[in-house]
Amino acid sequence: MKIAVLLLSMSLSFSAFAAEEKSEATNPYPEEKTVVTEHSTKVGGKTINYKAETGNSFVYNENNEVIGSIFFTAYTQKGANPKKRPITFAYNGGPGSASVWLHMGTLGPKRVVMDKEGFPLKPPFEMVDNEYSLLDLTDIVFIDPVGTGYSRAHDKGTNEDFHGVWEDIRTVSEFIRLYMTRNERWSSPKFLIGESYGTTRSAGIAYHMGQNHGVYFNGIMLVSSVLNFQLDDFNDQMDLLPPITMLPSYTAAAWYHKKLKAPLDANLQNAIEQAKEFALNEYALALLQGDNLEPRKKRAIAERVADFTGLSVDLVMENDLRISLDDFVHNIKRKEGETIGRLDSRFTTPELDALNKPGYRDPSYMAIHGTYTENLMTYLSTELNYKSDLPYYILGGGVKSWNYEDFYRQNRDISDKLTSAMLRNPDMQVYVGNGYYDFATPFFATEYTFSHMGLPEQLKDNVHMYYYESGHMMYIREFDLIKLKKDLTEFFKKSL
Picture 1 (cartoon, rainbow, N blue to C red):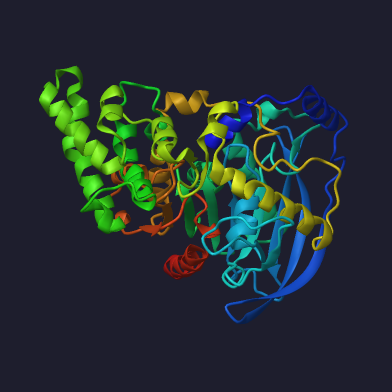
Picture 2: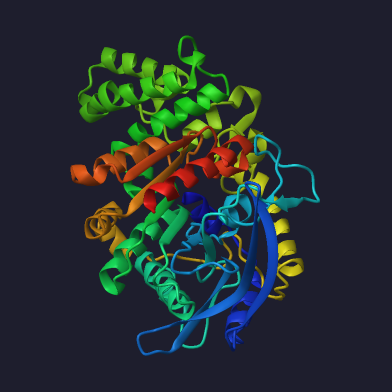
């Protein structure tokens, strides 16, 4: 989530702004245009013959005026009965991220080649047929919201019509409604899958489309979920939840980098469970007491925090027991001269480099950015035969600001909208995928969110939690890519 904000805050050259203004002023999409190609692939030993449709779809306002175009890539199985064949609408997050990560990392017919642990190989990069694609289970429509990919505001529209929590939910929902209408998919089993901020979008779409369009989804898949933004804000010193819900993720990273002492160093799961127990009890009580905490007790708590994080007791004391994300990533491997990743804390980069460059440079994002960009641009042009001179906005670039105003008035928490959607549609199943080494959307924060949604007993079994020993994009690690396909297959069976 915050990685997009971070990237957007970096300075962009005047020429980049000028290029974007020129492309929007001249309207890159005078008409709706798609390119259709036919392919086949093998998934799980089964041959899938499918059609790929790539292009843009207009977005309209309430006056039926064109306000922009959403770029999409749709894969549909040839010869399948649309009333029985599921359809899944997929997107990533940011806000400001194109759907490239889910598209080329796990769901689509092609995937980027990384090493077995998800670390990049040397350029030029390669892609292969994706034997773990979801095309054996569902048709898939990858959506790039306006400001990402090739999607742009134009004609009667401006970026302000799209770039906000509810503006985004309404316009992506409108794309889905129009796609289902034009392609006769209203009777298909319907799914959503979003990653990171895309999970915020999914909760909002399930609520909005259920309430306003009568669209009931069979299931929604939340990959690296963030529904309550309060749990990721270390700037509010009065908010005790961020350091509490982040602590087990620190423990997981410290375990991976061999910074925990015995007996916590013996087993990852055991270390995480002990960290969760400490965070919800002794740690939470100590933070609640603030300056009233007795000095000896504060020192004892600091020692325990140091045990669970691998940091020094002095650093914990200096930070008044609250370890921010910046404190952790820059200090856990300082002796080795390294800083660790935010999207995936397994990744490292020289600390000197990170400290002397503007902003925090996430080594886990740097490792995948070039790999995915190169493969997607090659794939769109050569295999899907879609040509465009527009810049394809992978992450950042096309989104300069985001309207959180109404969302902040709702306490920065959209989980209540997911609760409402589940109450309206009690058959809807919810998959939640968590990476242990993910600092962007910490798994314990997600557990906290779902344990405070107020779901009635009969709906609690609709939520299915899964865990992976990797980060935000768990599918870059081969073992977790295989596990993810197995888990999603199981989820589809439950949902259908």
